[in-house]
Image (cartoon, rainbow, N blue to C red; front, side, top):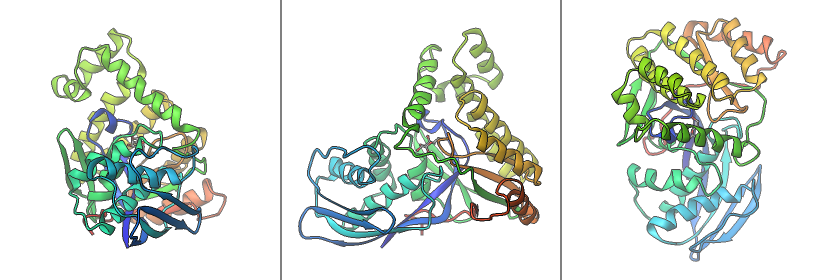
Length: 359
Ligand code: GLA
């Protein structure tokens, strides 16, 4: 069996695909694949919740109908095939305790777990770098032009730590989470299915950031952040009337830096303020929040949280809620009462777990 955890992004949203560092952590909720190698090239996978899928692993696989979960299986097979060639298939069953379509990266965890299972079924060793070379691109097979955050967090996180993931060059730094800090993941109940309707909107946000960068003369966002202060970049955005996506990307990059400092200094008040500023930027500049997420963030703050923000691709899904460990039950119960009319079914405590290759 192999398992790949979901992740919750603490801060650094919609900037991974611009090559900028992000700060997620793996959850103790995973997708599990029980598998056995086959003698032929068929990939046969059953999931209690989603049914059975079966196809021959050949070169040049193409996607099936949009929204069909078989595309995630095909994405993994196609990604491996591009680097190592087509190999033996497998019989597999999948189970999961990770909520789907909630911004917790269940789709990336599925691709990671199926990829690792296929490689192991073929007795292939793959390094973290190898996997990061194929996985983010592999996901584009499904249609979302995301970055590498989800796969890196699912693979390389460490228990008790947030993962500062850098992409240029690829590196993961494990930042210990202070003992007195606690996180909750709360579902807005607004479904955000990455392969579904939000796909174009997600990709449009990415394009808008890329086009804005093109008007600045910087070769990359990384270069902009390294060579200018935040104030200079804000002034440049105003002078050139750049799309709001530019301001989001650069200010979010500085927030990630400050959040790492706050975590290292055990400065929970500062960390909380940064989460709130991130949410406001995602809501107002990128316009990827929704009324349910905004109300959820507000309900968290009214319940005694130090900060909260939408997490993941946006347009629905979950919020990450941050509080002092001693306030955890107060914040939890406050949310149950204020947002969920008494039901505790949609809030998970989020403890930082190990990644698939670190367990
Ligand atoms: C999705 C993508 C990630 C990242 C986030 C937004 O989860 O898969 O790569 O872009 O959205 O931060």
